Length: 173
Image (cartoon, rainbow, N blue to C red; front, side, top):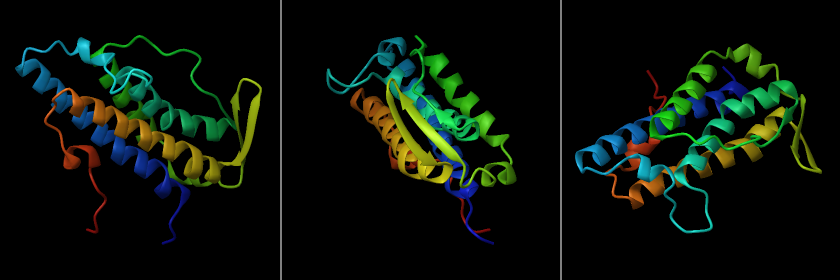
């Protein structure tokens, strides 16, 4: 069986969204056990000029579920606004993205190959094919924001590690 666009995109999104969901859950338990208000973590960042945890998780959802919606529509834009979500809202956003991606059929995703996708940011317009958009723009952004969210939680003392980050690997059965 050939390696497909679905395998390279949706399957990887789902694996990592599982990891993000897991490390958010494990971090929440830690914060609750330590008497730390999880809402104080939502706006945490590692350095002043970076986006907070809230935006990192919004970007994880946008560069997974939103990327697949954009590839299907032929256009991808940054979110219009950054919702003011609490910790539970961030967890729900990850779950909703995962649920939406799990509903995608491989044939539908694979049929996107070769289709035009335009990334728009203000007056900037960047042309891609669906596969180059997903592989060279969306997935790198997705992994960057997932890693940064993990790093923010670690910097706040959450006892999470690499195995928490990785999600469920797709091993040979």
